[in-house]
Image (cartoon, rainbow, N blue to C red; front, side, top):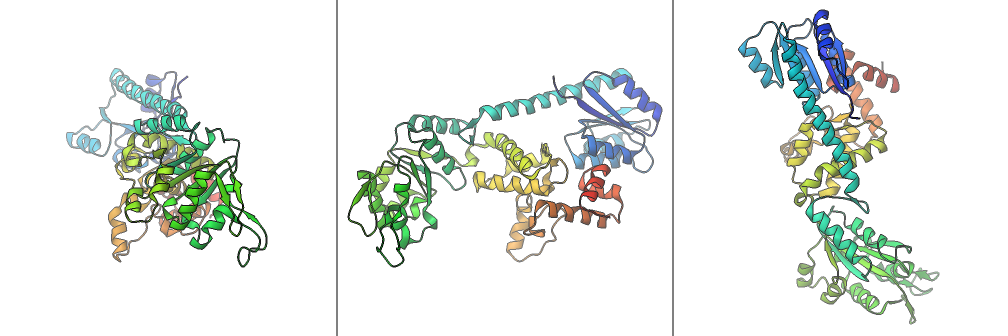
Length: 464
C-alpha cells in the first residue's frame, strides 16, 4: 500500500477550511487545517506535507510571507494560493516566489479537486520513484560497493571473473574511488577467503623498516631486534596481502618483493633460510605506474608481475548516474550512526551535489554528507547544511587569499571545530534563540523545525 499524502490548508476563515476538507476527503490523503498562519507553519514544519493550500490575505502573516517560508523550508512542497482579491501582479509574484497554482475565491470545488488530483498523482509518482530507488539500492550492492553504471557493472564482472584465479593483481584509480573495497572483494570471492586479509599502507612505512615489515626478522638482526618477528607476508599465509599505495615502496624493497612473488618464499632479515608462503598479493596505487617506471621509481618487471590482472576504479565524475544511490546509502548510514531521523536531500541540495566535479571522489562525497548530517537540525538536508566550500567555492578562494568571512548559522563547520554534533546542535539552538530575542516561533522558523521540536530540543539541552 502506498504511503499517505499529507495536505495542510491554512485560512483564517473556518468555513473555508471545512469546505476544503469535505471536498478533498479521500483515502490516502491526510488533511491538516489551521486558521492561524504561524500555527500553519508549525504544522508544515512538523508534518512535512507534500501539498499546501494557502489563503493570500490573513492576519499576522500574509499568504506570500508564508509561501516564502514554505519554499525556504522545502521547495518541493506544492503550494496553491487562494484569494478573493485576484490581480495579475499578485498572481505573477506568487508564481515567481514558488507557488504551484493560484485559485480565485469563492473556490470552484470541481476546479480545486482537479488541480489537487493532478498534484496527488505527481506526489505518488515521486513516492514510487523513492521506493524504486530503495529497491534499486538493494540490487546495486556488490561486496560493499554501490553502483549501477556501465563502468561499475564492468568492474563487478571483472572482479567475479578474476577472483577465483589470480595470484597477484594491481588496482589503479584516483584517490577516494574505493580501491580497498575492490581488494577486499577479490579476497572475499577467492579460494583464500577463509584466510586473513592483511593490509600494508606503503606510504606510512619508514623506508628503512620496509623489509623487516614485509618479511620479518630474526633475533639479533639489528639493534632492538630482541626476538624473532613474523613479517606481513608470512602473517598473510593462506590469505591475501594488500599493499596499498605501492607506488611509494622503495626500489630496494620492490626487488625483494618481486623475488618473493616469483618464488612464493620469504627470507627474514638476518636469516639465510627462506620460508615458503602461500599468499595472494593485491597492490593498489593512485599514481600513473607508467610514469613511475619512466622516472625509474618503479620496477618494470614488478609491474608486469602484478599487472597480469589490472583493475581500474572509475572516478565519480565518470559515473554520475550512481550519485543518487551513493547519497541514499551514505545518508542512511550517517542517520543511523548519529541517531537522527534524516529523510533525504531537498531538490536544491541535490542540484548542488549533481553540479559538483567531485575531485575527491567517493571519499569527498562521504565527507560532505557526513558534515551535512551533523549540521542539519530538521529531517531534510538543505543547501545551508552542506559545507560552505561546496556551495560557495568563491568564499573558500577568498579565505585562501586572506579575506575574512563570517560563518553562517549552519553552513560552515569551521565555526565549531572539534565538537560533536550534539554540541553543535546546542550551539545552533542557542544562536537562533539569541537572534530571535527568545521568540521560540521565530527561532523555529530560522532552524526550519516546528515549535514542538524546538521545545523538545531545548529541554534536551536544558536551554531556557
